[in-house]
Image (cartoon, rainbow, N blue to C red):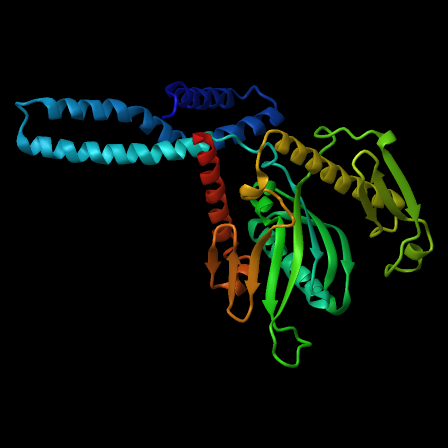
Length: 358
């Protein structure tokens, strides 16, 4: 049962925001913030208003059922209507419970995604590149901006590692479910016997941390500069443009050498470091609150095998929700990624609802 005052508060908040937004006196930053709040509430407000009427409507019909002088046909209709209203109220109650669940404060943030080739040698690095292309297509489809921070290439067009930033609305809320071990089963091009090989890549999704989210003292950082290696031209390889930053309290280390400018490499490295330290602090707080992240969808556990891409059978399986889609090519092209994400989101909501009951 949802406390009535909580439901009434949603109506009051919606009406209050509507009045504020119609005044035309608030600044653009506040207007954008309140517009988002109003939009978020707009998706549930019809359910809220209907929910508040249920008890009164059910009570009126039950009074009719108690009336001995009431027509038999009318009583039969009232009985059916009571059942229908109770079912509708049950459905609306669940929708409201989901809406009222505590929100992850990071859901509205941009995301830094890190993909690394795991077991499987060259094939793993090719799969790492395939995953990056898949996320590129998802971003393009959703009109999100993708900015590459760092790429470490391998042979045959594969990636040992790729790190990128995704900008847009509520990015982390969508991409957080991608954290974990992604496994691929396919016949490599170099395989002459036609045997299926299994390789893996790890994906880590971090909420982009701003300076206001976490304070990192200069005294907590050790910054080393060194000569960049690998491709990039003479100017890259002959100047100390590469940067390695170590966060002394946590031991988090980030190296960056993609840019010819030491200043740009330092800025990129700090962006990644800030998000990694922020995520580490977040995990620590979650554990302190006895939040069993391994039992939650989107927990970000990088050691958890979350998904298998089976090329011979043309299927992709998410092991957290036991969902298999026999549309591997469409999934890799970003076409049906939403279907998988929706299943993961619903599963997380179910787990949160179960936790509320305990």
